[in-house]
Image (cartoon, rainbow, N blue to C red):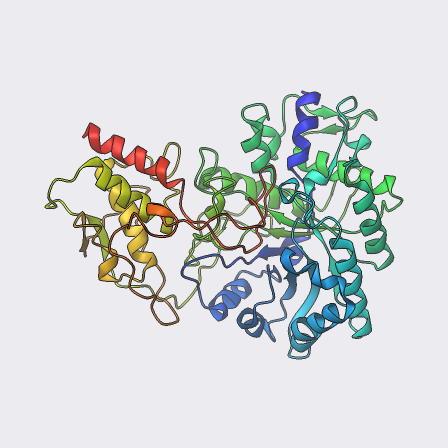
Length: 521
């Protein structure tokens, strides 16, 4: 068990404690085709008593909506800008434009995230040598602007940057990964010198997902385990949070910074797209997490309060699915601000629901369904159209172990067509698919599978889409964009920086599943 946990501790982070809701924040991501107006989201945060929010950029509209709210805000500098931040004048101008301008307008900006998990192995050292200079210049610019005591620069890092050796796989042996220790060490010391926090993103779900059956599922939750992890000092660890926090603390102690404050920048559990990604397990995780945090007991090496930011606030249907089909489904709220499951943020164990978003405007009550009167079409025609729909919309609920896995072939095709139709603002041309589909006012949702009607767009509609996939279109019939130059969003971690999204759920695989079901009908 110890050897198994040693390798899997790479994929998780640390435990945070908060005294009720006061220490709790959320990640507000916006990678979606249709979004709630920022003022609606801010009101939803206030209604739920959420007092901290972490953004992945410095969006002007969102920051304006947060002005005067009293909500503490972490804004971010995207990875692609880190190189330019090596020039102090550039960093100074960025701080003036994105921080002081808004603090003067009543936005309570407490942190600036310098990059997002820049040391992921998938980046192949692209940001290794530019992160620390950027951190230095941003913090110095904050200091020179006179707000360095109230606004701190930090670097959100993935928990795979520290580990315990295979010959001694216990938290007390934790150290930063040898290949990046010379880069992490000066960052840790700089944060300590400036009274800024160390920020880490942790995902017990990913420990389970990448563990491929080797990671004990009960170790991801808080109900105790039959075989705890026992450290050399006799301390027993019954959940991976406690074990991983102390692994990090040991690594910080080895750098002479054992008292450095820590923020859990991202932590959560998805609700769809994989057999262990469902609302039942998410509810178990969040409520167990909240109950533990409310006790404010911490861990053997780090008792007490730590800031925690849930990932995430809302589902994001345009996120890349390269890490897995669960990526669009991290929200504790649906895309439209409706809570997914009962969650007591106070940790008191009450079976109560979150407060839903108010004044949400939806598109018309109409759906795009497979046309039962369509002329017979060969399987290639079906495949091309389904692949096209799923390359441009979120089909991740389809497939084994997912929320819509019980649909037959006809309903699955309708799901794909409807997802595309809704993303295109219900443009009639988006529900044709060479005569295979038609618009209906009958709700075609089934059981636990919701055929989404999107939020009404707040801006002008998108231009009319191609009515059918074109074989000579850029990117082929799938219409997919090539992967971002940043690389995949963390093969062994989780990165939520807002890159160009590659939508869909492996369109070819989805098409095969739907076609197989159609053939069997």
